[in-house]
Amino acid sequence: MPSDVPLTPATAIAAASDAAPVPDTRWWVFAIACGGTFLVSLDSTISIAAFPPLRAAFPAVSPAGLSWILNAYTIVYAALLIPFGRLADSVGPRSVFIWGLVLFGLASLGCGLAPTSGSLIVARVAQAVGGAMLTPASLILILNAFPPGKRAAVVGLWGAFGALAAALGPGAGGLLIETGGWRAAFLVNIPLVAGLIVLGRGLGHVPGGDAGARLDLPGTILVILAMGALTFGIVSVDASGWGGVPVLAGLAAGIGATAAYVIWARGRQHATIDLALFRDRSFAFATLAALVFGVSFSMLFLGYFLFLIEIWRLGQVATGLAIMAGPLIVIPVAILGGGLAARAGHRPLLLTGAVGFTVAQVILYLTATENVALWSYWLPLQVLGGVSVGLLLPPLSGAAVAHLSPARFGVGGAVHNAIRQFGGVVGTAITVVMVGHETADLDDFRQLFVVLAGLGVLTGFLCLPIDTRLRSASPLET
Image (cartoon, helix red, strand yellow):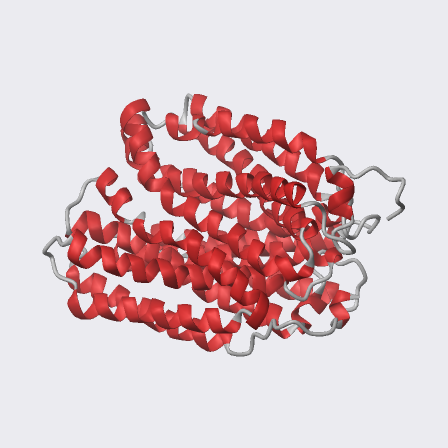
């Protein structure tokens, strides 16, 4: 960069691949980007706590109808992550990030003021669009702000903030709803969004890594159809069972759209998802492992929540607080793990995390009883689980993008996150079938813990081929 160009946040970010910006600028960008991710992740689970009071607020609406308050968000968010990641790569992450904040804030206001369940669902769809804009744009901002040697640590920390926010949601939501009703769970976003918009405007323009690329409209439509249909099929399991027409139709349509996209994108320049991403072994296996662990994490989160409520008979707020211990550990573990990953690669962390996660589920399977023992039993298991998740969830995001060029940061991160999000949808569906019914007993939860242990083993197996140790540039980095 010429010496006569003033060093602003924008120019500092643009020059990140050649020379690291000043530390204050880097961490300023990091804080703003993580704020957006934290907001989206918090909202994704805080709305779970709002579901019981929503049933009381709209008694004429069936539970299946109300479930679309959650499902509509999930489907739209998963379907749009990849297209908006591609857009952020093309036009620049800063503008996509700011407009995502604006839309998310306005939609949150619409949720909080919604007079009917139908208008609430529409507002939730708009929220999902804003969230899908924020997530990949925030990752690009962070990756562009830091040099390659620091990216493992900061991406891990970025992922840890998202996991922490998701875990804080039910507890925070329970407290908000007790004091301000279900509308408070959505209106709390307004001041947070306003603050982030003010701070985000100071970022300046950040050019996209793939600026000037033509929009792949047919590919974008196929990607939206594929992710939307697959997610629709999975979320329909609760209402119609695994063999229901909506489930089978959604899965069939999603698989068909995926196959059509592969045929369309093969060898095509500027495709919405560059299939060459999957030639990088670390990206391919980290993303596949994220799919499996996305299933695991969703099952863990919802399963533990239901276990404390249904088996130990804790209240909603007490349950939310009881599952916070593990997530609070994720942040320091991610900080330490990021530094280790930068020196030795992600694989040692991932394998250690998979072993710890599996051990925690085996202990629960062998020893869980109906007797409440929060401090002597539950807390140590939460610590073990928190350390394990901290060694798995954030490093998987870092491993996926470790060898990508700046032009592929947005779409690569979005593909990884969208596939993990789809895994979360699958995990929720499995958990609802296994322990979501009113007659679920301790044996049902023990079966859930066995499945979680098996998924932990599979995650570890998929992490074996990942190698992100520093090396010479791959074809994807040039």
